[in-house]
Length: 145
Length: 253
Image (cartoon, rainbow over all chains, first blue to last red; front, side, top):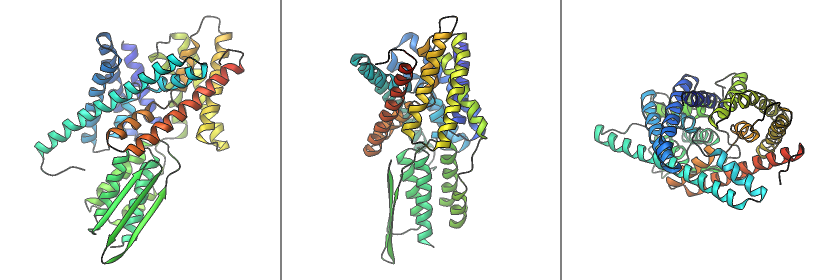
């Protein structure tokens, strides 16, 4: 578990460099990734794929939103690297790979998993964004761009 | 106010953001905010994944419209952050239009040295073989496949290949290397973990997630285009892996 969280930290820092995130943020991004992956691992002990992704997604979106306000940088800078370990990359690959192999059922299963994960990530970020917007409306009258 | 320059600034900001894979609604929002500083009657921007359109009109001026085709896309969070800062300053009148336009010209400066991203690829591949449940042996061999990927990317960049060919060739090399490692390794290695970890830097997980997010925002055109892009990337990688395994004598089809 500790090793997994450490792996996620390294993966997200590396991914921040690869996606050219501003270099001052790369270690902060690693923290988002590590926390998100840890929560995902714990959630998976109790829930299925979709719910685990949603729960971890809430934590990652929340941290990314806090960072974005804190550092006054666009959300994407923290959002994309933070979600990198969760994102359904291998499921998308396996969808086409199994299709090429002729395993239609495995391909369809992986495709559904990919869509499920992507929708859950989008939903979790939507939830947090909406919560932040509502909070902001209450707190400030002036919009912060 | 120089409306033509304002238009160019808005289009340049939008182009950089779109090419860096920013969310579509954010691109439109940024362009609209820049255009609205003119206080003209009509100031409207429209963005889709493959192009930008913007128009400025008022009874007092001849209408200005620009169409900009976007053909290249590569995620670059630093450029998104920089354009965001510049546009925010321009909209808040913290800098002049000329300064903003000048600053946008310099956004392309790289944030990291080239060997940083090479090391990052190897670190990413190795850490993913850990996340996928690989043992010590898989970790060590991931250093090899990661290095192969780095070298492949360098060659492909020199040869100026298209994105599809780049992914295809990289995956062929990775799969062939991983399959060979599986054959010569003294102890049993999970070749699948090696392959999936090594293709992680290319795989379209972020692309499909962005597609769904754009669709949730109501940007159906961009969502559809990005989903298709994700499927094409997945196809190029999967085809490459299958060919690579086939080339080393495995059964791939």
